View 1: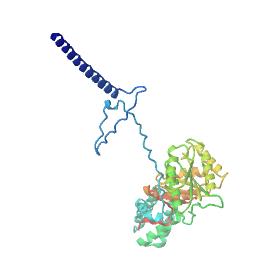
View 2: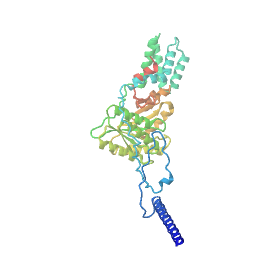
View 3: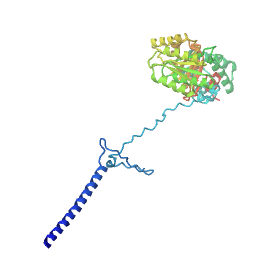
View 4: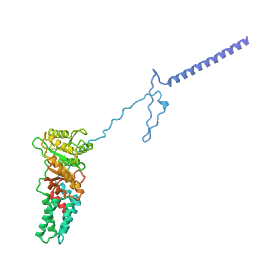
Amino acid sequence: MLEQCGVSGKLHLVDGYLGIIVIVAVVALLAVGGLFLFFRPKGKGAPTLEAPPRPQAPAGEQPQAPDLGEQQGAATTTLPPPPAEELVKAPEIEVPPPSAGRMVRLRSRLARSQSALGKGLLELLSRDRLDDEVWDEIEETLITADVGVAPTRAIVEDLRTKVKVLGTRTPTEVRGMLREELLAQIAPELDRTIKTRPTGERPAVVLVVGVNGTGKTTTTGKLARALVGDGNKVVLGAADTFRAAAADQLQTWGDRVGAAVVRGPEGGDPASVAFDAVARGIDDKVDTVIVDTAGRLHTKTGLMDELGKVKRVIEKKAVVDEVLLVLDATTGQNGMRQAQVFAEVVNITGIALTKLDGTAKGGIVISVQRELGVPVKLVGLGEGPDDLAPFDPEVFVDALLGD
């Protein structure tokens, strides 16, 4: 009996331990199941958990790369790109100075390049005895300065006559004599004004012509700048459609002073662009339309004929008031041949002589006027935007002779 009771007690004790073990096992399974649900990867239909906010990196430190394990189950947020900043800004409109008095301000540049001619002539004419050898030197000096053969002979003949009349010559008399003779050859009485004022309801039209490399497009831009400085409203026509950089270059000049630029497709019809520029000028009621034409080699007949076409097409809309031929002063007598060919195609009304500060051969002013009967109206005396000046004969001669 007692033995049975002992056995029965032991059985109850074993059953108690088994119950405890079962309970512990169930609790452990529940705990494992809960952890599995919490860390379970997101799948179709699975709940999405919000990722905790990521701490910001301190200023001056690089942010740490996120742990790949942490990104599992986290929602991906795509931030919108920052607004694009405007990279190209419109150029600020410049206010150019007026053209009046520019040549006086630029006289020192002219004197540096041209004074050798004047000083050489003064030294020769101041000698006590002027024999044939000295007169030959004077003639050679003038021809070397691109005065031209015919003008040189006229100058030498006039000087010889004056020397005989004066007899003895003081330095002041020699200088005055030479100044008077050079001025007479440059012809100060010629009308050097550029017709840039509108007539009635139509603007003045200026056609700029010349061969490649003379500074034609730059002269067009500088002229527009000078006119704006004088209070005129200007439209530019980029009719040089065969050189891609020409239209862009002219656009830059126009943007700087607020002048509208009419341009066409590369390789397009220059006459069409010129016509559109004049039409734009009439519609906008501007004062002046300046048309830049393609730089043409004077030996190419077809291109020269095309220049004549440009002028004829413009005249269907308005009168061409000025035809400015741009010549490079450093080309000397070759520039004279260019001028003669252009004069046969279009009626040139004036010369723009560029790079006059870069050569001692300023005598081309005399020769080109004598050959064409056309005055030099503009001179380029530097590379700056305001270094184009109306030509003043007296300032030019005084720069030749020095102070």
